[in-house]
Length: 85
Figure 1 (tube, helix red, strand yellow):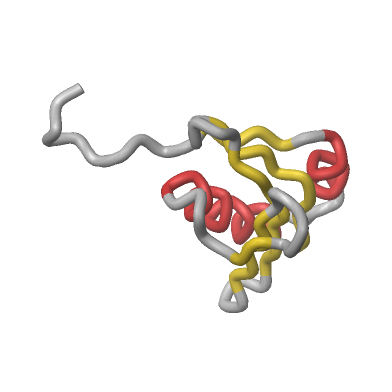
Figure 2 (cartoon, rainbow, N blue to C red):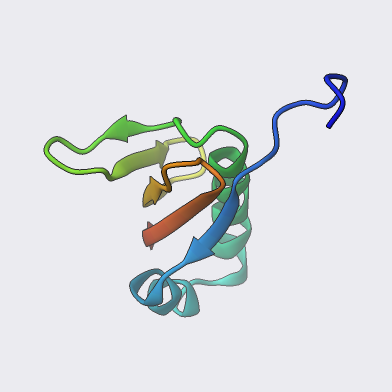
C-alpha cells in the first residue's frame, strides 16, 4: 500500500445485543448512530476504556448516542456490543 493513503478504517461488526437494540431505534436514531459508528471505525481508540475490561465506551453528547465496543488485536475489526440512541 502506498504511503499516500491514510490509515484504513476498522471493519465494524454488531453482535446480537447491539443488533437487538438497533432494531428498536427510529430512523433518526439510526442516522445519529451511523455517525458514531463511522467515528469509531476511523478512530478505534475514541471513547474511554471501561476499567478492568477490553471494552471502550464512546458517548457522543451532541447526537445523544452511546456505543460500547472493543477492537481486535490488529485493529482491523471493531466489535460493537451495545448501542443507545
